Amino acid sequence: MIKKLFCTFLSILPSSLLANEPKDWQLGFQKSASKSMSDIVWFHDYMLLPIITGITAFVLFLLIYTCIRYRASKNQVASTTSHNTFIEVIWTLVPCLILIVMAVPSFKVLYSQDTIPKADVTIKAIGYQWYWGYEYPDENIIFDSYMIEDKDLKENQPRLLTVDNEVYVPVNKVIKVMITANDVLHAWALPSFGVKRDAVPGRINETWFKAERTGTFYGQCSELCGIKHAFMPITVNVVTEKEYNEWLESAKVKFAKDELKTIKKIVKKIN
Ligand SMILES: [Cu+2]
Image 1: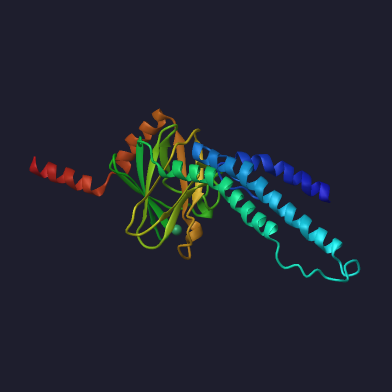
Image 2 (image 1 turned 135 degrees about the horizontal axis):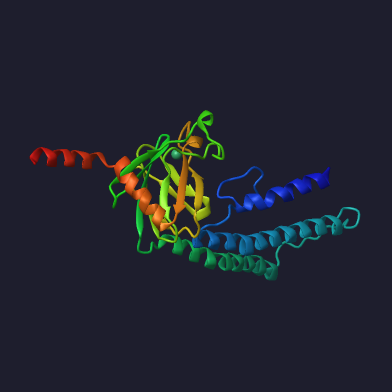
């Protein structure tokens, strides 16, 4: 039985690690698609996890050692020691050192996420109860992105993650995302890009990512925002420059801003 479970676990593991979306029984992060996420994964796998494992093993060892060594039958006269300067210095200093060792790479990752390089494409994501709205301010594109209901899903479309209008971005370009909300707090999160920012009404938060490979990437609203919080997914298609330009052409027609339409109407009237 245990062997069977272990085999199932192993067979699930590689597929979940390669996915751009969450998988059943997933362990660990989704496969990274940006430098930012690769840094986060490195920090977790090679820094946090070893430290956590070390501390847990050490504390467990101390507990077991104390239970055996100082059990009532072997240690009938209890020690009255209450202070030991050397030990107190050690157990203050060692945790401080561990925190400093952890803080350095952590701040480095945070800083790189916060410093937005010159953007090639800017997107505005607006959280609504309960869907996302997107704007491409430089392209005069505006559209809403609703989740596809279970009954309307096509083959290979993941449940609760597929939307009607996806975001398109070019690969290997700096994408700046401006995030805000219209009603309550939401959060725009895309695990493969290492992006998660709160969408706050009346305030614009900024973040960025540079997708390193093409594909469809899925994320979800990550701030409890009401009854349909689980039903406002985020779908980003990372495509080649050429495909992106083709999409832009069609999107400019399909999702042209209403203001633009009115301006055109006025211009027509004047002419
Ligand atoms: Cu939300």
